[in-house]
Length: 198
Image (cartoon, rainbow, N blue to C red; front, top):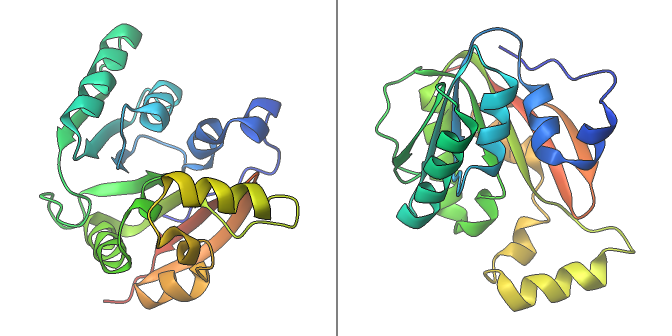
């Protein structure tokens, strides 16, 4: 189902992207997949904010997932679990999830792997399932120099092209409908839903 964009975000959501992601999910009990979840920063907040929903986090790093499991136990979250899995080869059934989230994960992938991951996300979403992406975006004038320096120091070379992606075109070609985007410093929240076309 398409995500409902909050008309008014609380002040924390304007500053904390994981809170904005949680608030941007559709209402009601959901099965939510968090891809490239790392130590669970976004998915922990999603699970805590949506106690009636079931959250599954996946990542390729066992060390990061151990960190996520520690946070799950510490927070006493019974509605979240994590699994070791690659985002571009999901072992879930078709249509298994109502929503999928990728926070700061897509830019790490080579372009073809990213397209495979997005195609896999579409496969495991049901109906008009929601997709939320949070990642780097094209920098404005004030951000350009620090972002370029940061990317050159710590990120893969292809990230300089990642920030120029036309998300409407890319997602449209992969069977999604772009709903809206919301800008943060150096980053952007992108909301889309699965197109009913096959």
